[in-house]
Image 1 (cartoon, rainbow, N blue to C red):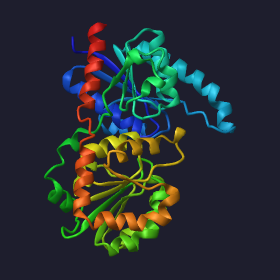
Image 2 (image 1 turned 30 degrees about the vertical axis):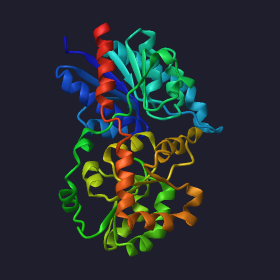
Image 3 (image 1 turned 90 degrees about the horizontal axis):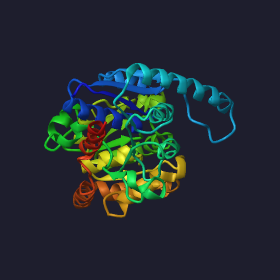
Length: 365
């Protein structure tokens, strides 16, 4: 039987959405007749990104709990009850054979309902420090796919499988595309290309850094592809008028952006780190300090400890950035060393390995 029905739930940020889409694509290639349904949060980016990837999505009226006392928290119990009832209706109508959660608050109600109905379930935790939703779901799901060692501190050991994080398949084939990619972005071939990534929503601090350092960066014979994020595009789009600077709210052709780049500046969200290992280019990580349990720093350190990337803390940017950046850009040897070392950390079969675990659940059913 291959006309399975599969629900995937997760969202809030690209870090939860893209893994879910990657898993769905892999399962679809194995089971062309399967039916897929995504469940996300009503007003978040998954409502746009999932249909773009060709899948149906249902939205729940749900949001995370704020860490401080706010009005939003007062509505949380109502949102949770509404979302649980809505999830119950979705599960009852769609009748899934398996349910997959990729984290983010949207996956909580749906997986809770599915596990109560004893529907086979799997969650995928991207970070070295788990989010609250996955921690709460861990006891009731069947399997937990992780990307880092040491997660038995948080999850039942018997359910853990280390697979790595799903990545977009088009990133596996960027070797040899540099010339085509530079032409796609109309870049000069005699210059280094810096790719700046602040995560799917953009990063205020990285944007401020690039704005402040643009002239310095250009003195190093560097051209810039700058993904500043939707929220910040209006503030920075004027730099498109500068020679050798391209500013984007969002990059849809990430494979080409990676292929065109010589050096990358990035946040250290779990999905970004996994992607950058596969891409195998030299990276300067600037972890966000505003993340639960400082897990971006932990994600980045796992790579830096293997001499596979450079880390600059936000608090050290004013002191360290120019020095570390120019050293890297001006040493092809160091670039090659970091690129080679980070590629060794790539778990390139993550998507297939997670799909294998889903398939086992389907076969058991």
